[in-house]
Length: 160
Image 1 (tube, rainbow, N blue to C red):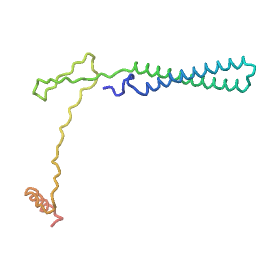
Image 2 (image 1 turned 90 degrees about the horizontal axis):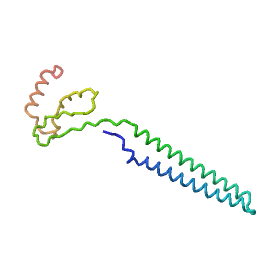
Image 3 (image 1 turned 90 degrees about the vertical axis):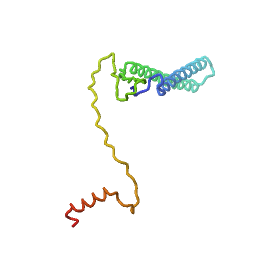
């Protein structure tokens, strides 16, 4: 049985993909808007140096966000590639014969691929104890238990 969820149903994978795409799109929008603003400021004779430098700083921030999104997309693709190359374990499926009344019969599993595992050892039978029954302290002991206690007292030399 597969212990990890499939990649298609993996929520962290899709959060990574969506967040990376959002970062790429947000970074591109930020870079393109600020580049357009810089271009307008360069052509404006009344533009100050401060406004041009502020726009350049926002271009740097947009480029960093864009790079983070690109790294996220690359890592999502790497995760997808690793998951698709992972070998899946064969799962033995037990078939149940609903028409049979014999509960001890087991149908052999026929596999198309050879199995290299050792046969399973049979389990030891379980030892079942009687349930503890609560009784009051003034209830007399059963006759067998009273006889056993008397025999133990007779056999024990320290009780004499």
